[in-house]
Figure (cartoon, rainbow, N blue to C red):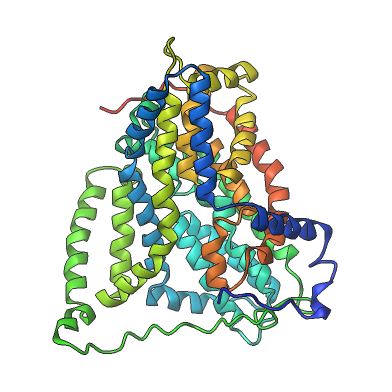
Length: 485
């Protein structure tokens, strides 16, 4: 499914709508990126070296830099595993038989190819408010289900781009926002960062009315662009045109052949495990508000894993889904410890005057900005940096120490600063091949096939998002950091 596929038929490859200047620019940009951009691990490795050199140039002793690197490297293991389970939980839910059946039913609703593309965009973004892991897999499976319809001529590339909009537009404004989750969980935050930001609950980030307004506007705009930019039936390039096999994969696990396999195929243990987990989850939601409960990553992840186990019903089917999801977690496992080390070097490696590299950068932010201009400057900075460090949680650990210190000094609402980061950080995902990889693997496409359409989304999202981040900041009032306890 992930191999090369032939070019679209000549009659469908050169139409103005498909090969307009914006799409051509997006395709050329991604072709360049795929050739010249190394793996994301290389970027984080370069960032480690740059931050270490910056700390040395700031006057920090070499041994202090090395010590902060080592002290910080393992400081985020709980959060790293929590992010891994966000991916696994979303995958096992999206690939369960009931959700697959739901996808098949949803795929029968659109009546036109363009309508199908807009439908994929809407469904993907709605699911991204629950989980970015769920959104990525759900969107890809929905696009494949629609492509199987013989009566619907849908542009498969446009549908693929629409399936990516959860990651490129709205995921960071939802419950699985890495930055918002980190800030709401003091146990997951590095101590140096907690001292700067304090605890920021969901009520001050993703559940601000300003945040929900941004999410609503992005949702409407994205669906409209997906619908309008999709080629009509005459010029649509279908999965069949691209020689992509979209037939449903077999999920037949067969019958147990050995006595020891019987429990793997029996729902008995599933029912008992779900009952035990459900008892704990019910207690968590009973003893506190649902916003507080869902903002705890442990509760959030156990909820998804329990739901996934229940939906798969048989332990064997659940374990197969988990095994298929694990390769998508490799980048998180190896890169997040390095992001933690970067955060520690930024804040912990100090010169003789007790000044860290984070202090120097934050002072630069303060000197170059006012309270009014800070959200716009932070938004632009976060968007640019996001292309080189494609990890919402990891990049937050790199960026937060100095931007949040600057937000305190300029008295910018700290929760809104987190949301400025969230909305801006998602923008480069629209043209960055890193997070496209799991999706294009499901679709049987390459990143260059969908980026022309997602690049068009970026061109419109960028000015809209930056304006909203700047304008809505004036409706909020600064509050000092709130420490746990």
